[in-house]
Amino acid sequence: MSLKQESRNKAFEGSLTKYSFESTALGGLTAKINVFLPPGASSSHKVPALYYLAGLTCTEDTGAQKGAFLAEASKQGIAVVFPDTSPRGAGVEGEDKDWDFGTGAGFYLTATSDAYKKNYNMYEHIVNEIPKALEQANLGIDKGKVSIFGHSMGGHGALSLYLKNPGHYRSASGFAPIANPTECQWGKKAFSGYLATPEEGKAYDSTILLSSWPQDRKLALKVDYGSDDQFYKDGQLRPEAFQEALSKAGTQGEVEIEKREGYDHSYYFVSTFASEHVAWHAKFLKV
Ligand SMILES: N[C@@H](CCC(=O)N[C@@H](CS)C(=O)NCC(=O)O)C(=O)O
Image (cartoon, rainbow, N blue to C red; front, side, top):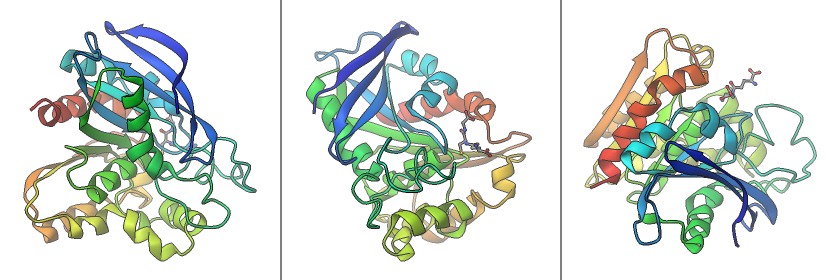
């Protein structure tokens, strides 16, 4: 599994490089990732990494181009890894029919339904495969210092991957995350298509996962959402359910959930709070 460099751009005194590689997790399809390295990162000076998971209809380019994360990442000396949002070209019938399912909508899970299980394994791709590929390439990323954040479907990915793997990620944050997917239309559609039984979706629902977080481990979670976000108003995000589950779980740690007045679901919202999120993660990544 070797990385092939597709392009490289200097940015904020560091570099943004697009790589492709043959992904075993995605059934042998070609996967693409963007990797931002801050100035000075090298095999003899390894830096922490923040994974950014994008939302429905997005690619590995969306966060890199529109997220406004790179200036703060450069300042903090943190790498940012931008994976894609689904496998591309699996050839499953119906995967390109809707914008909220199939291509561009992998939901960061391990598919178990017959049609999707060969390729739709974004969970394995993000949690294990990409870190391994980056380690093999010896780019200067410290595999022991990793955090994760994301937007919308990617916010669901960030929170659920963090909660499913206590100790693996140091912190997780979401911009308008789909925080309770078993109870919203996007999540129900994804889980009924990708999973053999929709019941299995509970294992990817951050609101449900909170109750199994070990009591002796501190949480590091941050969530922002906009009061004028149409998808929030439509009940797709459900941050209140997440907040209620947090209070019930009673788990200690650093948790910030904020409703941002007047903001919508777009990258104007994401980029407004981008630096704040990167700086927040830096506190956990740089100790
Ligand atoms: N295409 C959808 C909207 C999808 C959407 O808003 N996707 C969000 C993530 S859930 C996004 O980030 N889109 C890309 C962008 O804004 O650049 C629609 O027609 O309503």
